[in-house]
Image (cartoon, rainbow, N blue to C red; front, side, top):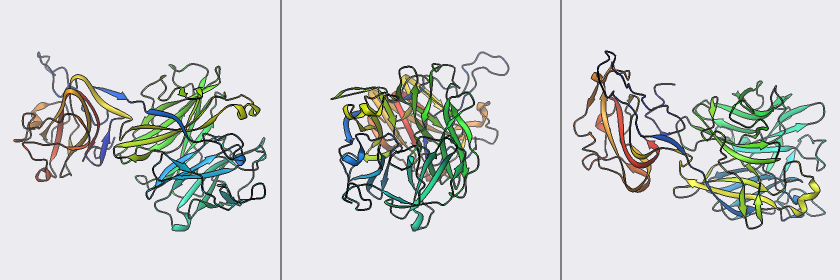
Length: 476
């Protein structure tokens, strides 16, 4: 872990990085309560609230009674945009709020004698012989912040036959009119569902997460990185089905649902579509990472989104769609595909088996929190303060609170000797104004003042004192 990770940007709690482990026993064996020992805290995962009302459903003839889970949602300059796959062509929808979606007439592709439809055109893209509609599969779209206007939007999709499997790329100036790249992004890739790409501004490179079939006949997730979107080197596994011995033996990872944690320093998300072979169902599990390479599932076997109970009954198959978008102050939305049809159920059953996209909401930064059921305390690792204000995203129960102390950290402070950690006058716990209630961005305050600019450049630690509190993020 880089020492400069902590103390800049927005820090969220996907693991114990940034939290000092403390020492519980003195080196000389003397009776001691230890120092900087974290107590009474846990990392808690928060499930989203799923609205079972479908925001996008197959209601047009060219959609052939099915909207697939290989769908991308993003917020683009105040407009919400969606590219969704059907049993027919790739289609497009948009929204002003991320809740109510419309299917605009794009006038690009003729269907049954008319161009009055929302079908997206991709010129020069190889057709998939396994798809009767002659279109590729597993699309994902992202906005490239460093590309010229003509290549601002980028797409990845897969192509497969009995003898070859590839990952394809396309580019667009507007996200509607696409031109396929002449050469595959990757050759020989068993990547026959949604593969997700993005430009990682911290790396200054493109990352691509692909669905793979591992050596043990298990589906999993691979990763590859490139400075040029037109070609990616061989990918490496980062998450494999059956690699966790606590999982049931008949489960593996179908789609990855990758995204950066919006606005966070060094935090990444996957909303994994986990396939259970015996019941033939799919549900969504949460995975988190600091670097996009090493991942863990904090809920282990427990789904983040399980079955969805809707007005039309129980939907046992749930896929995570790509994208996390803000839809209201303090609210984020993700989306999921739901269907009553089991994974291997025949296509003929789709006409009588409803399917579509639903919205799942959570508070801003609300995937995980550092939480105390009762009283909790922890110290951060030492870091150089480079901020004028420190604020928190926090929710407390009735009578709960959060306080924070700033301590000076000397040159010998490695976490094992309290002699190098000293109080700073005016910034003790007694000086800290307790924060209670529900706040997305509340400045920490000492004796009525939140400005800490005069401490800039000093090496410090933070000590948090919690009572019945969920701490979602620290902002520097």
